[in-house]
Length: 436
Image (cartoon, rainbow, N blue to C red):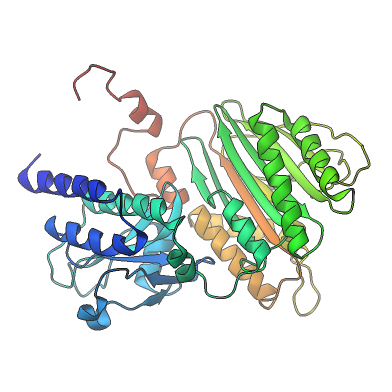
């Protein structure tokens, strides 16, 4: 390790040490001052809004007036260099005519948070792996601070959010997640007015759990129903309940609370990552579909039980399907397929799957494909949705891990100089007592 590398390592360590009592408002200035000591001047943090249409400057304690026009307070994601860095997960030069200034994606795991601007025109900053490491650390710090910051929530919201949506977004898991064998991405609209939809996923050893709920109604009570269904499902699942026991637990919880006046449809599923066996159950919901080989749509089937909370007492049944490596499993609510355009034509399941297949062929990362899907969906419905629309997409790579270059293409993750696969990286960690 040369002197410059040692200095950067020291600076990144000092930034971690400084972060423990740091507030979100103090983050931009602290990052900028520490980064400058490592040869990264002019660092600015931009975060994406809730619908991922704009990038907003997180100014905090940074005096941005000294940058003049070189520090805009907001940027469009479509049609801009910073937006392209966000969309594709790639470091991008500020312009083709100058060097020394770069836009670097901010990723918390696989979740896209925004972009980092590093350097000035002619500053001499060059692209290297250290830039991704700086951005990775800033993303982790940002993630650790934003959950307790109203300033962050105000910054990334472009309009007023209703109470039901406030509950929903605070209960949802991150919209994007990836391991060495599976990736998940989800979208939910209308972002500021969503009321009855909810999605969930969680990993326990070799089993990935997935669920989608759609509560009756389009009001605050629908939000309460969806939140209660999701929370009950997590509670029973974490006590070791299987899928049917979890679904019946949700049904009992809703029935006890609402006495049959409120219910939720839903699909609950478990995917075994080593084998690709998908076990699932359906309670009055649209069944999942599988996109296979990026050309064939496989419709899964399971006899549906009545919606959870309806009080009818009809038990659910389990279905089992074998996924193939590369399969994409799609869970969705009817708001995405039943939306109609100005002529009354439904978007439909065929429209949904065709859109996903076409954009996968274009080579876009999965989160970017879903971002464009929801933008297209809003345009199709002239910006006014009559129902909540949720899509959860899972890709199973198979029993063997992704190559790092595959995850880079699928999720927009930064390139890595790590060993050949992610699993290799874990296997090559030194044992306790071994030299590092």
